[in-house]
Length: 138
Image (cartoon, rainbow, N blue to C red; front, side):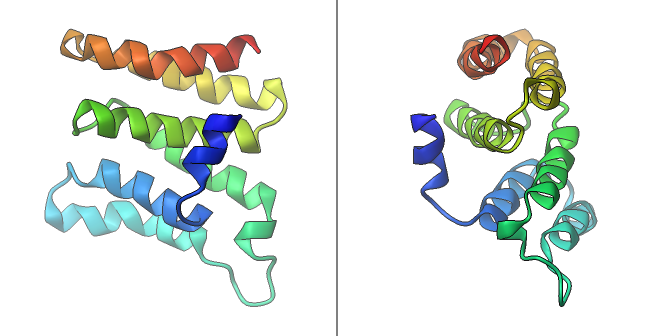
């Protein structure tokens, strides 16, 4: 969990989610990028009179689940960016989904996504998968 603390030390939950979404959106054409990002921006907003997102674990789970569902590959980026993306996403998953039954489907989906990446990503695949596998067996 020390890694999660280091990862979480920069930015709010909202800023970190925006960073994750922007990472995936940068591979899209300019005209479709805004439409891709919009549902996440909307999910991060707190309607007047509602519990702030920072205090609403259920909404946080929903938002991070939305992000995880969009992960269908390693996306565009260098090894460090890819590893950073998955470290941040995994940290949020482990922090929010404290029950194994909640966490396992998310981590399993990510493991499958990483395993399905082209062979040109072999080195980064192992670095990204190691923490995911550890999460599954803990």
